[in-house]
Image (cartoon, rainbow, N blue to C red; front, side, top):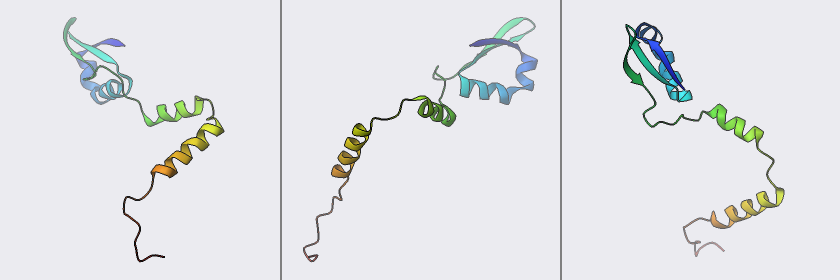
Length: 91
């Protein structure tokens, strides 16, 4: 969303403006005397997700199929083995 704001508004609420750019991906056109002076936009053009966004994704997602979860756990156990060979003195 692009919002037109005055330079006075931008100056007085600069930290909030940056927070909106960072967290929501909002863009601002700063005007002075009714003329567009500059734009403040996200550098990568895409909003960032927050931890709260991730929590909401997990909450709103359907539950994981038990068979799938078991398969993933078994696979992780099978590949998550130490790289060090067993000691010849153990036994």
